[in-house]
Length: 526
Image (cartoon, rainbow, N blue to C red; front, side, top):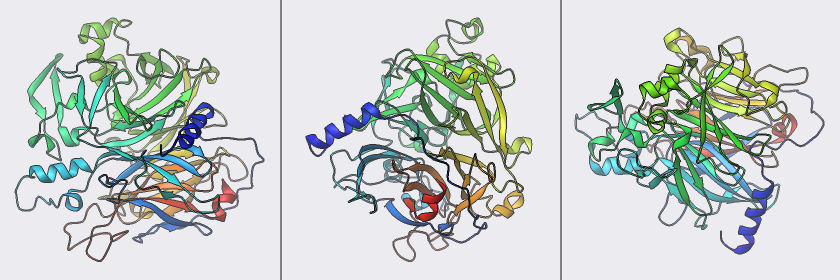
C-alpha cells in the first residue's frame, strides 16, 4: 500500500467482506427494459441509457516495468473504501500475430524471443483503482505499490508443500480463465487450457508415458520444456504480500473458475468446473476456516444427486487405480470418470444466487452431442447446506433462438438477485450455421423476479470475433466492469485485420481491454 492509512482501510474491508456480491435489503425495482438487436458491428454496442469508458487496455503501464497483459478475462475487486479498490484481472491467452508477430505462414518455428513475449502477456494483473467521488469514473493508479503481474515466468510453489515430479515450484501460471475471491482478501486465478501451451501427458495403466506427451498449439515447450502436471491448478494470490501458491488439494483439470461461499460452520467451500465437453463439476471442502490449502475434493453425480469423494483413503477403487492422493489430484479427470461422475456439456462459470443460495452453472455447449447452444444448470444443496453430500439439480434455462442467447459462459448476480451472463460463440463460428442469428457475442440480463422473470434481454454486443468476459460490479453497483477479449482474433495478417476495435492507429492490432459500463439504465434495472 502507498501508506499505512490505505493498508488499515484494506484490512478493515477484509474483516467485513463476503465472498459474493453484496445483497442489501431493498425494494425490488420494476423490470422495464428493451433489448438491443443482435449486430455484427465492430464495436461495443450498448442498450439505451448505457455508455462505456475504457479502464485499461493491453500493454498499458501498471508500473515503470510492468504492463497490463493480453486477453483480459476474469475481473474481481477488493474494496479499500468507497473510492479506492484493488482489482485483479486474468490474462488467458495471446493472439500470436498481435503479441509476438508470429503468423506461422513462413513455415518457421517460433523463436525464443517470440515465445518469451507471449509468456510475458499471460497470467494476471493486480493494481489499484481509484475515483474522485461516487459520480466520477474509476482510473488505474499507475505505479502504486500494490500493482503487480504474474506471468509464465513467475515462480509459484505448490501448497501444501510437496514435490510434483521432482519440484516444489512451478514456473509460471498460464491460461488463466475465470476465478474467485476469498473472504480473507486473496484472489483465486484458475489455469484452464494449459495443454495449449505445454502439451498434455499420456498415461497408460497408471504409468506416465514421457515420450507420448501430446504437443501444444502454442509450442512453448519447444523453447523451454515444462511438465504439463505443473499446470491446471487453482492459484491463490495475496495482493498485499504479492505471494502466490498453487492449491494442489483442489485438483488439476481445465479450471474455468473457482467460486467460494462461506458454509454455516465458517469454512469456505469452493465450486469449480472443468471446461471441456463431457467433463465435470467439483466441490472442495477445506479442513479449516480461512484456508484452502488442505481439504477434500468431491465431484458431482448429477444423475443421482450425490457428491462423490476423491479421497484416496476413503475409496478402494482409487487405491486400486492410483498410487497416491497426489496422483488422484493430478489426474482428477480420470479419477472422477472412474467413480461415475456425470459428464456435462462444457461446464464453465459457476455463480451462487445471493437471494436463494442456489448454484448456477453455465453449460456452454456440447457440439459432439449436437448441443450447439448450451444451457444453465441449477444445483440446490440439501437444506441449502454447502457441506451437504446430496443435492437436486435442474435445467434453469436452455440456450437457443427462442431464448435469445447461445453458449453461456461467465455469469454474475446483481444486488437484486438478477442474473447477468456473457456468451462465448467462438470466433470462427460467429455468424455462421446455428449461430447465424446471434451475430456477435453479447452481454445478457435475466431478471429472476417480477413480471419479466426468466426473460432474456441483450444489454450489449461485442466487437468482431470478441467475447465479453469477467463481469464484475463495483460495490455501489453504479459501474459494471467487463472484459473485451480477443477482438479480431481470426485476422489473417496485419494487412487484413478483422477488427479495428481499440487500436492505437490505423493498421495497428485491436487491443483487448477492461471497460466500465454506467448509465441510468444500469441504475434502474440493478
